[in-house]
Image (cartoon, rainbow, N blue to C red; front, side):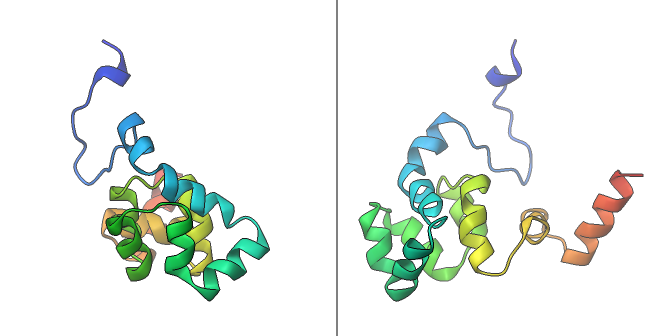
Length: 117
């Protein structure tokens, strides 16, 4: 059996597979667009109108509005594309890792240091 065939849930992990990629297509496309300064300015002027432009679902728009990073992952967001959105919120990958694991930022950083020893 291939590791791709094993859909055994990993506690606390949101599996990003083909189904989630399709679910999050508009969300991820919108986040990717934020690489462009003009797009970031347009988003800042009217976030929900910008979300509509990419066909985001009600759940995705709510997660954007609430700045709910875990909710965005649950709504099909790819961490690689969400990084552009979360970067605009002042969050980096360690902040997101802490959110995903339910740890404080300092606890998560300590875990990373220990894993590297």
